[in-house]
Image 1 (spheres, rainbow, N blue to C red):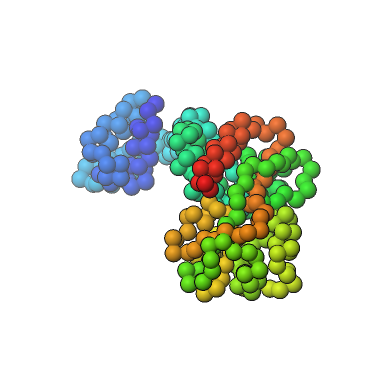
Image 2: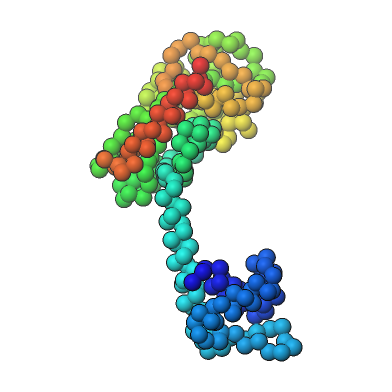
Length: 290
């Protein structure tokens, strides 16, 4: 039986009028009536009582019995359609933090879509330990984190990396190339990206002094807080997305990289797709940071 015929019947049941059912489906009343007639002929029973001179209709006993069966039938048809559509796409569920999503995934989605035309990505931004728990129970394909806590049953390696760029407010008076001594800790918008970065940072600045602002999600707050003498170190790909009014400077001291770790189950079912996506991100990062 054609699902459209069943849908027309259920719309008549919903609105209790053939004219309203036709309006809801953007069809003519004649089309709806013909579909109902076909259904009744197919089943060999009368489903609707249509009184003369009355717009509203009532269900026969057969019609009442058909309603739950018809609803279940449409659900099965929709599920089958969804399965068929899913088969046309490469699905990848990425679990990551809001910063990594903002820094790398969002700006590189056009390149990913061009490179893998049937790719369908779902990104969930979650706390680090929630990501680990989800991956362990196979409720996610790929985890991306700046640092990975020890976790039995998971594999991790560096997915890609980016250099860190010094960005300052439009009003700050600093040369293009500076050393870390020129930057005051009290003016910093600070994000403790990972252990290697924190170690490097403690060498350059006294971590006993408080920064102007500390956050674990720098992407969302940076444009608001970058004023007066404030400064921050962010991945270069993100710095290049900021309004040109914000200034970019080079630091004489070699800064730690912003490294993103790939976390998956060993022998992950989508390991080849993950490797392909990771390679595309690496390639585009190399182009953008030049």
